[in-house]
Length: 57
Image 1: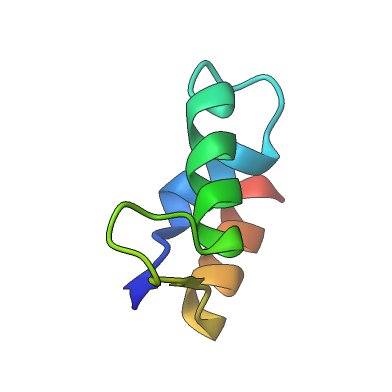
Image 2: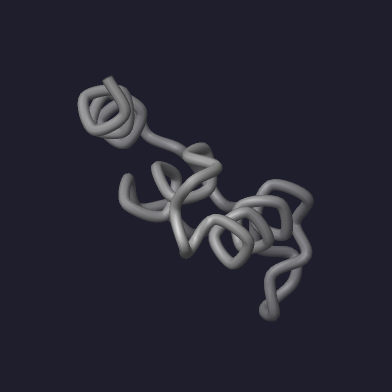
């Protein structure tokens, strides 16, 4: 199990971020269970979602 950091999630959701293409791929692979150490899914905690919301808004 891996927990997604709010910074990566913010970069993945914010189109104008220079890290958007990279973070988007990390998020997509994590949610699909395609992380290097399969099967290893990426989880988003409530805290991660709240921190991401605060950064974006």
